[in-house]
Image (cartoon, rainbow, N blue to C red):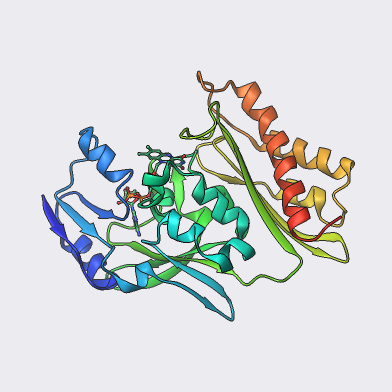
Length: 285
Ligand SMILES: Cc1cc2nc3c(=O)[nH]c(=O)nc-3n(C[C@H](O)[C@H](O)[C@H](O)COP(=O)(O)OP(=O)(O)OC[C@H]3O[C@@H](n4cnc5c(N)ncnc54)[C@H](O)[C@@H]3O)c2cc1C
């Protein structure tokens, strides 16, 4: 197995392009190295992105914030600006694993591992986040909901690397939240999860995005749930409609961690609770 640690994202993409065998990007390694140790992944080439400056940066501009692909969950949780503007995205990422895992794991690795239960993904989708994708010959910007196509599958081409995640600019009357249900208090993967992002105008919900995790092969955006609360002050009737829309959108598996019936019901409950938190964070009363 060859190991490369390029200094630019384009160089990383070019290494992927030239490799004839199995090539993998290495970010925090908390998924990749576990798979390698279990013999589930046998790379001929590992391309470590942690030496690439753009991958390690968190920056802000007139259009929003940019989080590099190698920024760890711990670094995100220590960033005061992001904790204030996107608490839901940060708390979702900070739910991943233990302190040890947090010091390595990245949002982009969480996304590209493509687990239906990945914690940061519903929060990023609800936030309207986008991925800056760099290939050996071109760059593109892709909404997060278009990256994962199924369990363990992404829409990235063989030579493509995600350089960063962008989050849109935030007004004052805006809030987001992420909740997951796990059978233990921590160190478990979501049985159901929900991310909610909304903005208010004169106390009324103006825009909303609601995304569920672990209830379908990929995280799912639920426009009908957003529609149920837009134009309301998040009264009980609106919340019930939101919950019903979320439950209706679920297509979960049935396993020992949760039955279909359970997951469908809990999706509505969690989305309601996350919406209430996002509403309060946006200054709603
Ligand atoms: C003990 C433990 C607990 C965990 N708990 C949770 C949990 O609670 N919730 C949860 O969601 N996950 C959990 N995980 C899974 C894992 O930690 C996360 O998915 C993590 O975010 C992966 O990030 P990483 O940087 O370590 O990815 P890596 O392992 O480096 O990469 C993961 C995959 O993404 C690809 N990749 C990485 N970066 C890029 C990039 N920039 N461009 C293109 N492809 C890329 C890699 O090639 C690989 O296929 C846990 C794992 C462990 C070992």
